[in-house]
Image (cartoon, rainbow, N blue to C red; front, side, top):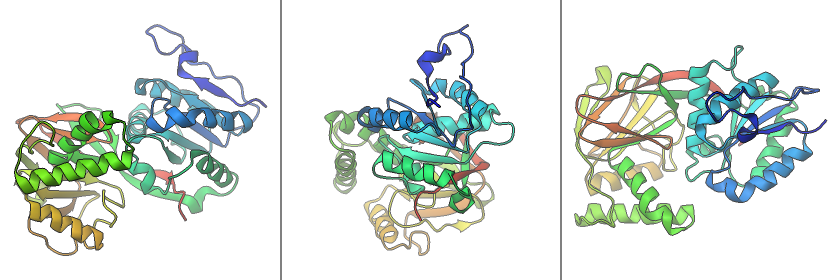
Length: 349
């Protein structure tokens, strides 16, 4: 049986009025459906190897999209072949777009298959949380082995974040939100550091150094990350926080940015970390995280909570959910709530 590989540009679904995507008949149900974003950073160098791997393995149904707005068409085609596992080959933005389509699109009447992630973007927090790193071909081989047996022992449930803004009815779904100074610093890294063409690790290190220099020196310059704007963060019955925050993060992931797990007070499925814009607060949070005690011991200016309801409001500030940016303004808050959890395949033991 030939490998069933479709590209969005081949399906006729990228222009208005074009016919629906066509899926060639399959002789057997594929074990894996692989959804690839060729424009993800890692795929620029690795996609030819991935295509060759798929051509040699008829158990893999490979669908490539050229734009994230084609992911809905991709999932409709993937649902037709009923794979045992859905693998996303892209960065956090690609994963977020797929999660949003799965949540809002009802493409899988019997529920979506378990999902796995192969990291190939600039940021890969979701993939790393699931134990995926290194060579994508090795990861695909491992996932195929898993798909041949009982997946249950490799599955983990992951809570998701539903973001609504400007009264939108359909939420955007993700796993990690950065706001306040963190969002500004992420945009600074994307717009000022990434264009230098440096490796991701070095780019992130330079960004961290620039942020610390600005905090410690109080300097302001176009080549440094900007100062955070004031925010009002409401957490339902838990109260509210007001001020400037170097770091604001909301996540459902086990690990939050740094190496240690986040232990939060309160009751809820969303983990909130807010660090006030003071050098001592940021350094105290860093030390507590590296010691595995972030949230377990009080640190001045560091707020860690668990809740099911978060509202973020401010003056012309930004939040970024898995790579997608949203504006936060006075009177037009961003609202976050838990979304329906999904099953994911964890690669690490």
